[in-house]
Length: 423
Image 1: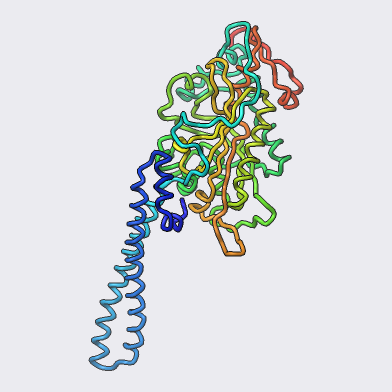
Image 2 (image 1 turned 120 degrees about the horizontal axis):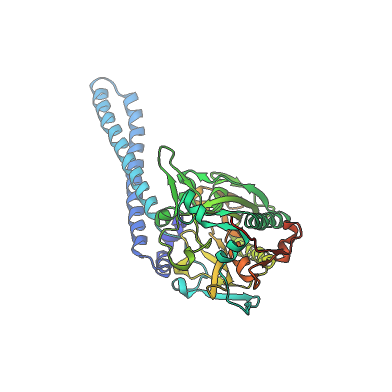
């Protein structure tokens, strides 16, 4: 959540941030009103409790009828203290619930909606083809690499089997991502894919994003994660971190699950938008002052991975109105997709500043005392990479050139050949 002190001292800044995200700035006023009520209720409770303590001394010194009268007053005062304490707790819960409705304050993001992003950089040349371009699914079917039909038969729409070179290529992508992250000083992690509600809430994936999440509600109250970011953020919940040696970095490998509610059109063909995939996610804990440079470092590591798969791409600075709840700023690497004649997101990296850590109570010790850390995340490799690789490296006969950066993870293989015969 955002800093309550910031909201109290600079409410108009937060209102402006709400407007930039195309949200109702009245939510700020709701928090301020709830905060005033909480302070009033808390003051009344503390005053009654102080009076209750002073009465204890009077009762101890009193005798006879006077003592009996005081005991009656103490009984009533105790009931008042209990009632006022409950009212203060209720007011606190109301205020905190209102505060959780406010997303992070965007910092430096372009104004506007989804289409108002700014292109920071374009890398590589868009390929040209002498024959009609095939999309990744058609290519994969020729390689016997992806089986959507049997995926649907077993699990329903937007599920699939990766087989043969499809499975090998995904493992090559993920293993190379883990290798790169480990060499850069990240601790590799294989993370849980089922988490408690507080982990989802703490990272900002419930609320307006709840319809994108799978929930196990048959007595378990667990959520399937859409990214290992959730587990990695919750890893240090309620802890005080030592950041004196710089950022703490993890690279999480996990299966990921997303309902993809409301997704239609070309992205639903193949493996662009599916319900299950694998991903290696970078996650960093650092001081707020270092978070802005750390964000650029995560982007540089994503650039390195994009160079390994050798596809043309652009980097966009996401508009404030298109940011997720917890992100203060987000950069996406979008790969060129020849079959769609456009760019599609492959990676993203977000600086969530202190938003997630404040919710999850993750702090660092400084000269001025304890304060929330900053958290950042970034994609380093995922199943969707297959689509960009297959389309950009396709040959006229349907075979695919293996990117040089992945060949060491595929036994030196240089080309995926078309497979004949029935599957």
